[in-house]
Image 1 (tube, rainbow, N blue to C red):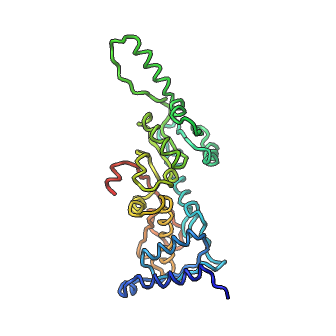
Image 2: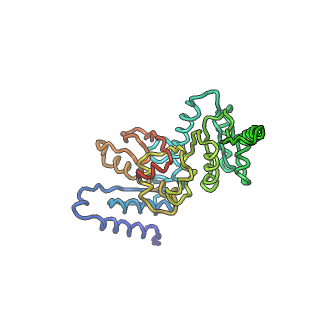
Length: 309
């Protein structure tokens, strides 16, 4: 019989897991049994999670009838949760920014890259009265200044200053006054350039984005490019991201979601609902036979918040 490399790897990991805990801690642990189908990268993250937490486990990646963990964990509706993590984020932004905006006379400015066009189109169908702008990969600052009507403000200042050249007048360009907030739909490479330009001109506006805007960043310190931007993510998850080292933030978020899934699986297998477990990716206690609503909050990117981590 041909034995797969995955099977050998699994046996080795089970052995290492058993050895990684002291006898006293092992007695307190509940063994978790996992039957999962997923890609190799997620298998590695699952094993890493189990070993880091010194969790005793049995795992099988070969059963074709087992639970399917989708390759893109951030976009998938993980077992026991009501929605995917990114869907939860976008739902919070829509409810808080679009549906409950304070000033109905002003518009939300949605800035999106080409790859985010499908989502922008869905938002446009749902909220047609807002402003939508596809940012092109050319001179970003020229596009933004035109969009915010900065040139008109500068032109008015130039005319005013020419009335009496002996008077020195300070000038801060004013953007058009019909915008209440900005929602960014783009990846890290574009966002790290776009957001600082917007902030330099529209410093009185609220900025929003999902975590997608910094998924490819290597660590949280890189997020200072997105100063004052509101992100739908729990404080516990931010703290976890600051304590992990990986290739990028997306991998660290994926690890947090996998950790949540494993802990909740253990709760169900051993009926541990009295523990009032709250997942790191959400703010709601896990309840038996109820899908988990993460009930996310907004976390603002700021140097002050980084100093508190």
